[in-house]
Image (cartoon, rainbow, N blue to C red; front, side):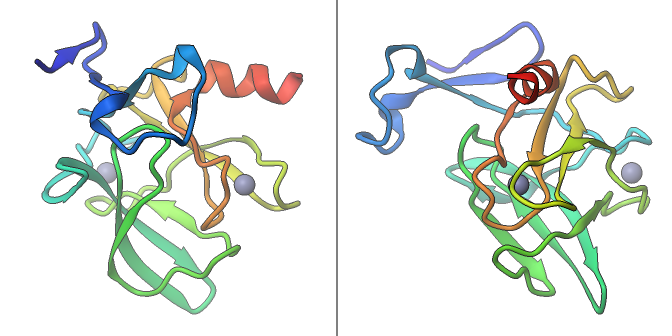
Length: 159
Ligand SMILES: [Zn+2]
Ligand SMILES: [Zn+2]
């Protein structure tokens, strides 16, 4: 029963997920990222680590004195992470890097949650295209960590 969008994202009905969190009529489906790449083109989908039954997005994080890796849920609006090494701190920002080639993920705009917070962009195509990407805040626990297309992020910021 799974369906894929043109750009390779898998759509799952929201009913399969926890209910009662959002009643908006247009919010009946959620996107699942099935392809994600670092700016240099490495595939960062980690099929060994699944969250909600879906392979997650693996990244390396670094801040002064701390370094590690986590896997982020590929399900839109789900910020669950599996920390593989190191420690994340609530409300603290980390720079994010490719776990394979160590290239830093690009930052799109400032997140309003903190003066130095950034919306980090992850492309859904091997060659980074800002119109086919997801963006999320690099501060642990920030609710603006959202799987939405980067064009929509810019529109929200303008409003
Ligand atoms: Zn890479
Ligand atoms: Zn934020």
